[in-house]
Length: 315
Image 1 (spheres, helix red, strand yellow):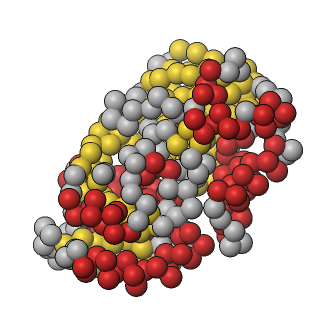
Image 2 (image 1 turned 45 degrees about the vertical axis):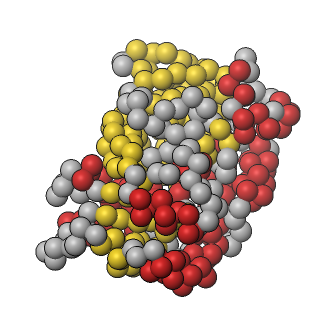
């Protein structure tokens, strides 16, 4: 194993993030990194989940303890999973920074992260760290049980359908808030409702038809929607928002309330907190899942918090 200098960063770059904006901007980002005296090696991702492999290899085989993601929330999620699933060092020994080039950048909203590359690089240079909770979820995919980790929000029901449609649009070259809103509105005419049961600490706390459900560590998803307005990312607890069966017209009329978090005051909305939840559905595999905007699989779902499990760089 090559021992790396404690000052050297390993940068994982997703050239396709932001409709290939990363690829176009990377030469400029290199100049800014060099100008700030950031010592680094970099690598481009080549396929889905490649960032997970690269992060794990950087830690286990190359000795890196300081990583930077250049991309969007999906790339951050992939790198996170590489850090969490290696067992060479404690996850809190790894320092992780983000240069956002994606379309959502919802994780950064939680911390009022700057929008310009130079200011994001200066955040990284300061090395101000925050021990951040991580979510762990088990789910089904093609009849196999899978496990995934997330740093922001997992969405189910309607949210998962919107994420799936948005991801398909990204693959076709479309992205941004407008693309997300189009996916949201078109999904309204396709989605019905799902019957779910929620258990907390092995006790049933909810059953009924739902429109959507969010569970997470931070507050924003979907390009700025405040789905979990009371979330605290280092309290060792998930925040949960359940929107029960509601008319499509009411959803449209209250879209603006998703952006300021006030929708949780609606009579159709329930909120919970806890460190462990189990979500089942009737039929059994009828609820689909996305985490940090990435489509995964379906119910039954088991969520668990990993408290203060990763060292993030924040402003």
